[in-house]
Image (spheres, rainbow, N blue to C red):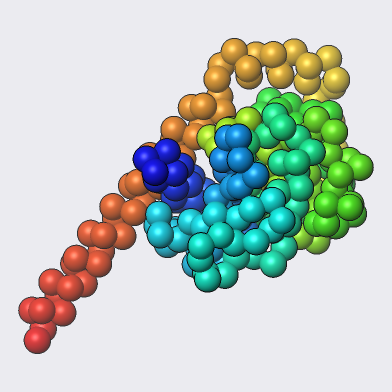
Amino acid sequence: MKQHLHMREQMVEACHGLAAKGLGATIGGHVSMRIPGEALYWTNVLDLCFEEMTVDDMVLVDFDGKVVHSDRPISPGIDFHQNIYKLRPDIHSIVHTHGFWSVAQSAFSREPKIWHNLATYFYKRTALSPDDTIEAISPVLKDNIAIIMPWHGAITLGRDLPEAAALHATFDFVCKLDVTMDGSSAEPMPPDACERMQVLLGKAKYLERTYELMCREGRKTLEQAKLDAAERTRLKARAA
């Protein structure tokens, strides 16, 4: 189906964009996208990093956690995706990575403090879950857009794939600020400033523009990899 191919292409673009932001250079992590009107979602396979993903590396998973029409491996810890979709009809995409800074933040077992305007996206919209099971996540899920899992990493939730991916890249930046600012004498942003900035960020369409940038960076990285491979092939042929 054309719709499904388009969704898989979107998934690949998101994976490449996340990789370009340093959020997918290792095995592990998952991006998912709900299929409207069905108890199914697309997600990526486990045996490749985000940068390597193609449309053939996207698999369908049902809301019982079973892979449909494929024998490719997926993360054994992916079950929170379908369960969040069941609990939150407003959420259509979920991103989870082991990004360096979100993992570092998770070791503190606390939400990041608000050190910058972009951090206000997550002001009063971030929760700490005891672990990555839905039994732990569901009591704190509410209408939050980011979930921290201690010693593991983070989940971001979006109304669509671009939003979930852009939130994830932004959250990793926010975590980097908090980890590196920890123990400093600086004061976090006061509540009234946080609320005002949340409104301004919505008007700026920052997440939409961030996702567009991620996609451009992902395409540029992929194109450079192709050029590098062609050059290696050329040099090998000359040496033969």
